[in-house]
Amino acid sequence: MSHPTLMVAPNGARKQKSDHPALPVTLDEIVQCAAECSDAGADILHLHVRNDDGSHSLDAGRYRETMAGVAEGVPNMPIQITTESGGIFDVHTQLRCLQDTRPHRASVSIREIARSPDLASHVYGFAKEACIDVQHIIYGLPDIAQYKHWVETAIIPETMNSMIFVLGQYTPPINARPDDLLPFLDATKNLSLEWAVCAFGQNELACAQHALQLGGNIRIGFENNLHLPDGTLAQNNAQTVALARALINEI
Image (cartoon, rainbow, N blue to C red; front, side, top):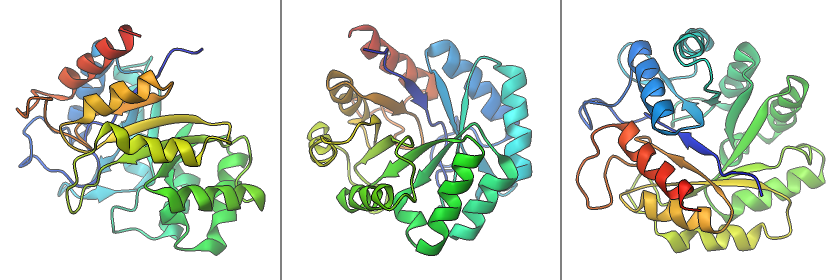
């Protein structure tokens, strides 16, 4: 059995400094956060970039600049970019982001790509051509059904078999519970997957522990949760990463 992977998602698309002063938004802040989280035990950085006003961006230039900054400041930390729409971008823009950035790793929401079914083959076809390691974002069981259909119809290559199950919800806020994972695992039990979990709310670490016990990987960070298990604000992303790393070390 391979060692579980700990990914950190330090900012996301929506939260602002008003939510937490340690939320990394600028290039320098993201690089510093990546270094701190790497030291605390994170294996991979899940990267969102922001516009100057703090809003969500899929700008390839911003991605390339930030990826270069992280590569220089934290050279041993792999990067996964997001193609999340954030309620702003269409599938054409998401595809262009991949084409113009050509990252080694990217997260792609099945649900969002399904908004333009005619573009799905282009998104996944380009990802295959560019050797992008795609992690499919799964918000619910319909996303798994869509994944299965696209694999059966050869839109998604069978080798593109990484998923992240999203527990809980951002808007309206629903705190995740460890048992929320079970329907996802049941729906994918006949698939050969590499899977991970991220969880909204202060039960984040409890959900992570449950996922680890069941053989999954985990994603931790301010994108999904700002709090420690006792409900107090975490000091920074590195603090929760260190707690998650301790859970892995207990396996």
